[in-house]
Length: 332
Image (tube, rainbow, N blue to C red; front, side, top):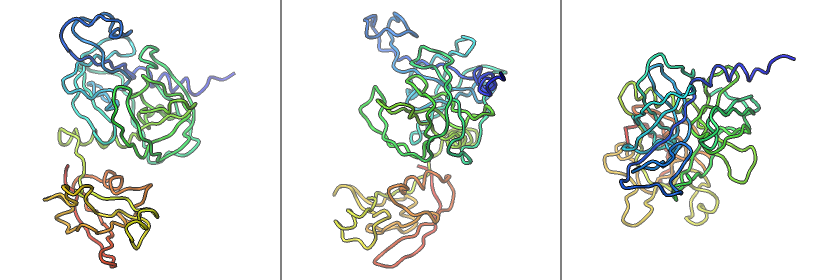
């Protein structure tokens, strides 16, 4: 029998997958049982606050992972490579919108994973997920297919009560477990096409990954500007559906109604892109760059697909008349 093509992918990818453990110094002695973990047993004066996976994308030590794996600017990160070498890692950039963090270790000629193109993915395409399941089982590999594209989920990390909406995700039936977060989702050529990010508790074979093109944009920003730049329009709005249309007596059942959320708020941020473009409260944003705004595609989604400095086109409904506004996105 011939060897599975997955074996070739594993040999290409595994050397560049790392374990990430983060500690936070709180002082005192924390040798109580609840603070013991397999990665940091009986540590005095510190405790592990998070752990997960990541992967090397440059020979000098740049690592992609999730924001929820590496989010502490003042935290200590220990990076453990596939050959069990340990490095001290530093958080150098964080994408607050897309659950991406970039860490750096000091090294040279390190193994790396090539980055693919997530814009050309297809349903049914075979993929392989890598990581360190439960933070204990290193070099865990699972295979599956792409089950869905452009998924929207509401996610919450175990140590937080804050919920975040994540859009545009890749859905896969390759097993993604706690600890796999931040590891690569790869195609059969061994190129990363996503970053493992979430799973559905209580369900089987439903996992999600951030498209790699999002991380590639972050890496480009870091290289050019020394930071991750987020585009910013500067409006508060309410997405319109049939119920909202009826409630407010609106002429359309889609789009985004520009409005303040609370009486003390403002709908248009002073000095923002929206203010400079002449957007007004009670305007309805119908389209952004030719794409209809609705529950599946919010204004925020459309803006975050663009780059800072890019000109965008907004179709607006104002007092029953449609007009088109062109403006250039500024940095948040």
